Length: 169
Ligand SMILES: [Zn+2]
Image 1 (cartoon, rainbow, N blue to C red):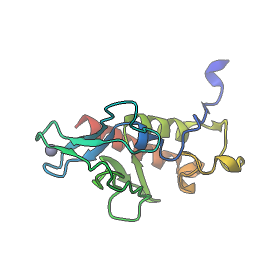
Image 2: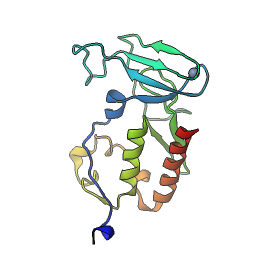
Image 3: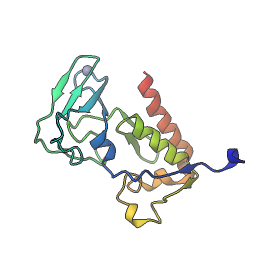
Image 4: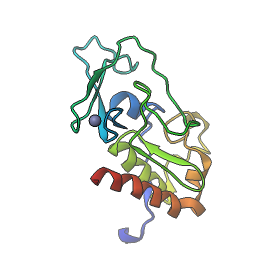
């Protein structure tokens, strides 16, 4: 019987900046245009991870670029609008982004991408953000409406697949 139960999605309750603050971010290298990473470089417990005020380093294993972010440089979260979705620390284009007929899909890293896929695939959402107003500011509550519509699901999943295959290249 369990084989036929609808896919469920349990919102982990992440804040809207969860992956930008706590994880690695995959970006396009400003020097060689291949895949680079932004890592947090917290040196000791005094660095406040939750505020995002952690030293960041952009590293590219393809060309050897290594760039340290100024400790007090502003953190600017973008929600799209420009030609590219950019990271909040170095303002470099995210590696994981693709356009669909309805709008742009993007993810900071693989974990973020996988969670988006689970969300879109699920036919049953444990915490539907439309009915729980206090969740509207969270990571999933902030997703644009077209991503959540069943009629767009196949196209959204194809977009997520394109993003994932760009990692293997
Ligand atoms: Zn590079």
